[in-house]
Image (cartoon, rainbow, N blue to C red):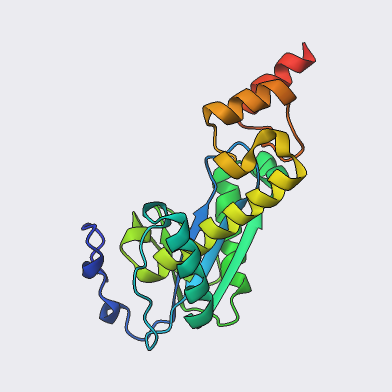
Length: 209
């Protein structure tokens, strides 16, 4: 199998997975206090390589947006799925992330034989899967999934900003920044906040006392 202990992208050897239909899978949005968690699955076309794929967090917004368009155009298959705030509160964020990844894989128009998952654990799926720590910076297909999940979630937070402008979701994307926490204290908890997250839960508890 591929060498996973070294972070060098060049050590991902496609030949180690000969005969497999590989999809890369990653999520975006585990840390924010608001909005859904997103996941993406991508099957890249070996005949149409995409230059510049890497962990979405290491790319500029403009680069992510440009690469997302290229991925959607050139990949053999791609899919994006999400888990809502209510599902996150019901399941916990880990299980919601796993469910979003499972949904993304199941939405692919081509059925993969192996899913390469960013991180140290895999969702339970019908197909085989393998977890790769820091895979979003080692495996091109996971990098592509990272980019699609991140750009989809950012776009969703711009939509939420239009619905709830007082929280400035367009600036912090739901993460617990000083600005977000200030707006949360000023305006209270919105319908799209994750009620199981500590800062949100604390405000709800204060309101009940």
